[in-house]
Image (cartoon, rainbow, N blue to C red):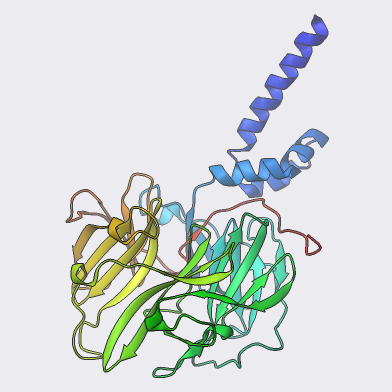
Length: 381
């Protein structure tokens, strides 16, 4: 009986210790591996790493001249909420962040010619091999990137689309993806796009937008999404293009009906030119349409279903505000230069809740990072 009681007490104690450790930041957990064998074994367990990641809250990434910082958006927008510099322990200048997935950042350096996958919390750093057959690099029109996770194969993928000069086009066969498990670059073989964009391999892909920054793909529902645009007869047509990470194919995601969106001006580049931006609002795939002083926010209540698009917010602003993310309470965090603003999502006209000028640059294309202790898969897989 005493032995049985002792086992039950030990199990309760272990459960309590596990619960406490799951609430701690990765930096502390790395240190606590040295406390005892049990703690080291527990913290090193892949199931513990997964549970810890699932509980962690995303943080805003802020890139400064001296390094990268993060900020808790569930708290008030205040300088005290900004973290210390993230240790940057490999010999490059502060990198450009071109992707964020499960605690890993895809970073570019050497003007985007080179890529690495980096976990700022555990300092895991893996340079990606250079593809000798890659599309010729053009520093004026660099590659567009996407970074995501294929849960069916426990594999991380990097997707690369050649940048395109205005008035020219690229080819579906030029769209590449890199598998971390195989450690090789491949070319897209399957395309599912409407006939107006050419539905077979080898046809022209519409030019990818690069407004206002590099067009980094948005990760949602195990697919990477971009806004693309076609120039036909002096008019611009927008599309949402996605790369399915499990099926390794390109497809189109329906956008709201054109008659419901802000009108597209007749001239090609008029004042107040209409453009779109993709982001994630809570658990929904979202689109923001900008034109002059009007910002419309749409959410797709059922993924890939056009009729499920719903306009949730209209903001009138003299400055261009980019939605970054939403808090657990539903408030929308927007960015304009060094300014952060929170808007209430109650009612169609949102109320400004907070305003804050930070001292770095928020990467509007890759705004969020969730720290984790997850490991990269072995190349041998």
